Image 1 (cartoon, helix red, strand yellow):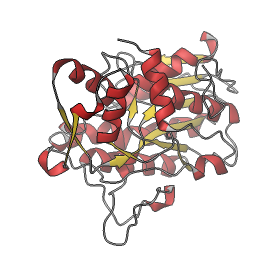
Image 2: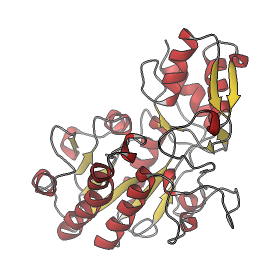
Image 3: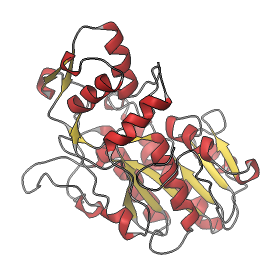
Length: 313
């Protein structure tokens, strides 16, 4: 399966200078990266059983073997967005503090940290902010993201770049694998299609759903690029292309599995309150990725169609 972007998520092989130390290896993105990875001796997968990102000594011990030319690829995070509102210290330990420690380790070893971040660092439209695809520089240092999760992820970006200015931050958004048992939005819609006559989904939050396999292929392309300009010391955006609401994604999922998309009904965020505020608009511009000489990811609907085909019921 070859994507419209020219990246083949099934065959993309990393060609890193040294070993890739993959944190979050059991997560949906980490799993996709492992599935596409190169020979076992170039990839060290680290899960929560191997390293506790909330414990600095555990992090330093697990990465004690990092050497010059290696890549530390951090896909791990505290991702319980609503739970973070009541556990800010736990979220900060993993999302805000750990990236700085990883960057210190990489800098000391002359290695390269690639740290995956999120669209939730953006506050969404507000006074003085237009609803246009957001560039990395659009994060105003004076604006705090609306959620604890977003605020801690932004703090982690800044900690990493402060500890090692040659780190690379990759923001992405709305990541899913699409399997019928997946805990992500696409998997949830597939299960609700089987269990409910109708489903209400918010139509006033707009972003870019991103297929984990496509994102993994993009990250391997970045890794092959090497720790040099124009990717070192930058913030990049990598998502499937397009601006769409959760409601529209849900309709596409229903249609993709042969169900009637009219069974999905629109609602507002106010009708579906959550503990953590979500950005109303967090579409990430692909321009930074293109400027770095990297292959843009394909359009979101084509990726979703492939995800549903690869992960049948």
